Image (cartoon, rainbow, N blue to C red; front, side, top):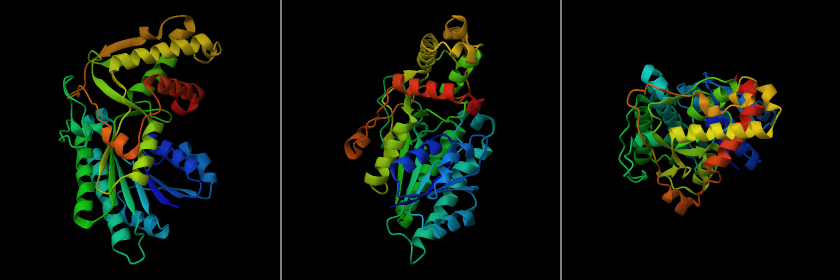
Length: 350
């Protein structure tokens, strides 16, 4: 039986992980800590709170005494750290909050974990601090370059990526210096249910359903590896149960695509939804597909953002070999599930 603290557990990936873990591990206790910024929504986990094993605490990861009290009063033995500012565009406009949350917040958690787990006689000996990072810490790649492995050099290019890189180094240092048991997962672009509609895939789906423009940066050639969020949850599960302390593991989807191709695939899938479900024409009357037109007609190319990394790609060989990790969803099946969820949860994203 584990006792988990999930930071950012009311955000996109944290919400999905909280549901995943609660469903799979029926004996474990879960504390969700979330400050509930614009991207955090307590309603995401409201149904889970009826379970006595699951408790929600509204609070900031920068509040060290709060974190220490949660860890000690609940005898937490596992931290899964999702809480982060994560939108690159926002980091370009207002980097300060990214430094505060991603760097100072992570360090505050580490300080609290060190005191609770290493500074007390009755601390759990099997503790683990799992940190969730991003492929953006490795920087951009040319098409001719191989995907990044866990040994690739860090080369962050945005304030967001730099803040995550700094937090990764802090995580490593607390293992090397103090002996704190830590693991890190570096993930590619996530998508799926509960994702705030500022990111590419939910934004395109929402705009396609409401007949609004589908903005694509530059010429749309920027490439990303896409990871369905449940596959990410599975990867973290494997790291927690099989990973070695001090190690980093890449968790990707093996689904690298140009952004414009992803947008066009979403458009095609939405057209198929409208062809097979006639009631959608009444539910979403402003969608081109409701009027017999192609959703692709909404695509518009817009000015590229500053310092836009051209390509991210992850080599997941280590995770496949050492953890038996393998993504279960390809882009087609993952998009179908995501579109279906957004159609059924209009009130959530509106």
